[in-house]
Image (cartoon, rainbow, N blue to C red):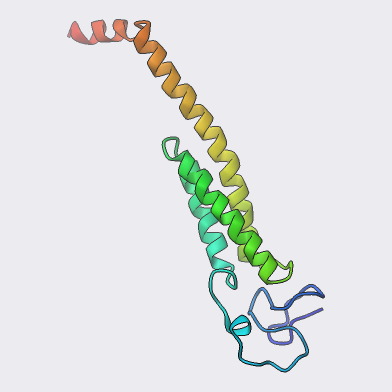
Length: 140
């Protein structure tokens, strides 16, 4: 099935075109809140933005928890967009969903590495692993 307004391919049970937002049903197009809505659920852009933010923060070791949270929000927005469009994804929403999944995976890995890093610093300070470095630096 194809959208009459923009010509993009859509699913049979889709109510709105995921690319242009046009009402798909053959019914008379009344001006309603659902058919004119272009907010967070009707637009794929927030999914993409949250996916980019999630992956960006996940790549930083110190803010990887924020990356996981932002990526989870991106996945939630993708789910809302999918239900709003009747199961169809646009290109932006699909990319945003993939970035969100990558952000969660990378965020978890970076959080584990950050915990290991902090543990090594604490253990090194406790057992004097840094004493030789301090002695070396103080000799200058």
